[in-house]
Image (cartoon, rainbow, N blue to C red; front, side, top):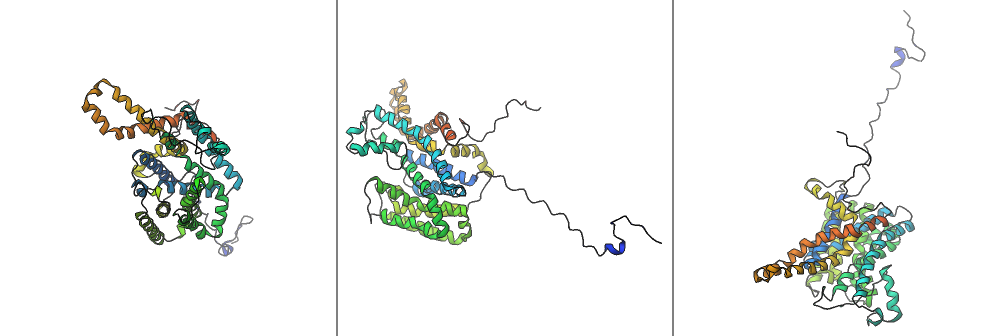
Amino acid sequence: MSHAYAPGQPSPEQAWQLPPVPPEPAAAPAPKKPGRDRYLDLLRSLALVRVVVYHLFGWAWLTIVFPSMGVMFALAGSLMARSLKRPAWGVIKGRVRRLLPPMWIFSAAVLVLLFAGGWKLSEDPDHPGTWGLVSMLNYVFPVGAPPFPWNLGDKAGLLEDTWPAQAAGPLWYIRAYLWFVIASPLLFWAFRRAPWATLLAPLALTAVVGTGLVTIPGETGNAVTDFAQYGSCWVLGFAHQDGMLARVPRYLAVSASALIMAFGLWWASGHLGPDGWDLNDIPLAQAAWSFGFVVILLQYSPSWQELPGRLARWDKLVTLSNNRAVTIYLWHNFLIMATVPIIDLAYDLPFMEDERWSSALDTTYMLWMTLLVWPLIGLMVVAVGWVEDLAAKRRPRLWPNGTKRPARGRRAVR
């Protein structure tokens, strides 16, 4: 019996000779949504909180428990390395553009208060002549230290007479950050060719300029010391972004970091500053301790896309603090000082004539300062924080905590 087959259809005798039909490939897993690393965001938020608490209480041990500056420079270095996949000049312009407008608002407030308080640059013996006038440009583009009087006003006045130094204090970080941004293309080029040498060179430089072995006078010396002190942390950000840290066995990285940190504490023990174990006064100890601490933090970096577990309840505050990190850092010292005249108003209340009430306020004064500074920071975020959005070419937001607003013109579906 003969069988007819459709054109192109194989006969049963031919079918077994055909190659098997390959199964359809499984769908590739969906790529992760691009976004911020919430672990790094959490570290930045913790660093900001630690800075505020440190400037409130001045506890030296906080510089050991959590070296905020080293952490912040490392996180900034990581973000810079990721951005340097684009043309370097555009990256530098973008970083500088984001940094300067918030600083200009802060600088304007400082200068208004300085001049209103009676400061005259022409009569300041610490900033004489033309050079003092030129140094005023650092309030606009902080390549160096801006001039300010160490004392202004009366000790019994609204603010302590040392308020100018406390207010202008955060500007050192802006200066150091700016220099790191400008130097990053060269540092990243060197890191790609000699990673270990580039990573450890700032530590070696700190051993030279941060120990008195070589002394560079004035603010130039301070700038060089700051650059060296935190340079290795900045380059650690490169190593984290590049994946170099992940390639180092964890046991080896943690063991080496522990030895470096132990060296830092040993050095600090023999070079205690005016505030004892405050590492901010001991550059080499600060550099070694911060370096080892950051290595361990980044070695265990889990790269969260969302804060897990109980940490999720802090998600909005973490988002807010990261979106307003420059504003919080610049203004927090000012706001800490502002709590004093506000709390002092309580002494004028009628019942405060009773010594028990006034003594109670004296005893709990620091507690009230701590409670009051956070709402003041929140008010400042609302008042001037939106400048950070303008600097980043985003729509201005008063409270950018990640809460999504419903689309306009759409009714909720019931």
